[in-house]
Image (cartoon, rainbow over all chains, first blue to last red; front, side, top):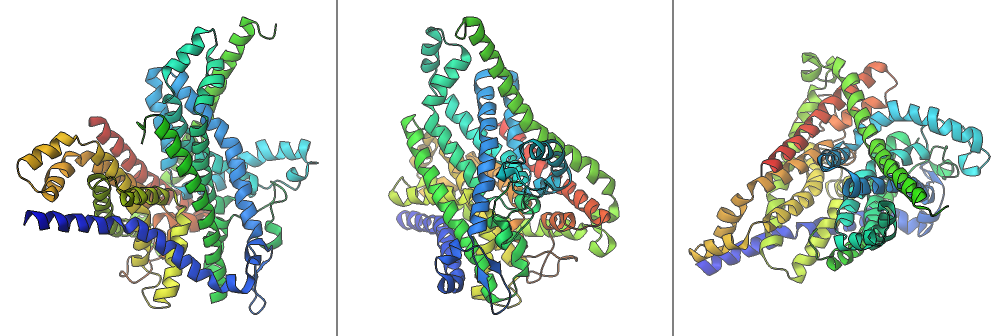
Length: 311
Length: 276
């Protein structure tokens, strides 16, 4: 009796725990099956084509502009967001007075709690105006001759979308970097101080370099968040399609894979067009899987080396 | 000169200021979001706004929709998430649990739009154009794909904090393992479980992307599990894209309600885990 009761319980929870695997398989399977029609018709051209025209009978679908758009917005997000996050992490671990640490890290965590659609709403009516007036117009005035800053800044463009993504990845990158930096053993800091280094030198030469693979992992996780973020980007990127979505200038409207799906899928007019959007989902799934598997390997290596107290 | 102690101290100071500026740059958007949502949303609040449906200029249908969809998602997601977490924490560290844990962690990082497009593809492949295709139920299933991995993870983490001596004491008294798990281990870590559940609910309540292609929004109150339904995030999105100031103002009002829900849950979590 005792034996069977435990056995039933164990099998039951083991089966339920397989739901994670089931979700992954369902996702991969349905997206592959759903995108079969476009993949069969266009093959690899589906990923490298630039045209997106759903006109019945002459449909052509290519994802290249949106893949590049995803990389461009995420790249901007990392360029702006990672230094900020590192600054925050260093401030919290190495500099802030004890009484400020908890409230500040709580505020930074709250950034992650704000729903994406509210970032979008705020971005559309508040942040966009700020970006146009104080950032994009001056850049375009003085640096407009550089091709990536060409065009009339209107606020609904790749740069604004990247900038709001930068804000959105701060909580992810900052909180993991904070863990990494505070797991650097104190003996390393003490050794460096004892040979006369200033705090900045200690952080730059010893702390950051000791924790660099962990910080790298934090950056990859931030990249994962930026690549998949949908609503705020959809509302701010300008939703260009086809050739004009190629990210040639930061001040042009663009499109990412996720914003393509969110903004266009309800207008899809034929089963073939549905299949193209599902194919965009498949491409996003691949990107996300690659990034997350990469992050997984980096993070397990880092936290195994350091005693594994963190996760 | 360039390496003199004074210069190095100056660099040190500058660096301190720079890091403090980073914190300010991160906190300003948060403050601005909360401020703008409060200022622009508050004038909208009225009994009609909170209880009437779209045709009477209210968002009552969206509030009801969010409560229903989050409730349904919780009914599906919480039991599955908790039992999965129990398995990962209580039943050994074999290859199977390790790979499940890795997959689960990956799922928590997955873009939510992928869940939406998966639900959408499923609808097209399995349900076709049946009346269940775009419905409250498919929306709840999609959101539970997001909720399950989160709850699994938080459950596992809080179960691991339960000291082994408790389990051993229970087993020594002759309790079965299932009994030990359900009546000793789980109640001990009640706060941890509730924290995880509240965070998952807060996350799911704000999700928009998976709802676009499942419940699709509606202008009316709940009309059955097989019908379309409204939700606050969708209401915010569609209103923000309207060219009319009244519609945009309604979007801000809906945003205020949503952010109150989400922040209340987060602060509740904070208070619960502080008491611990």
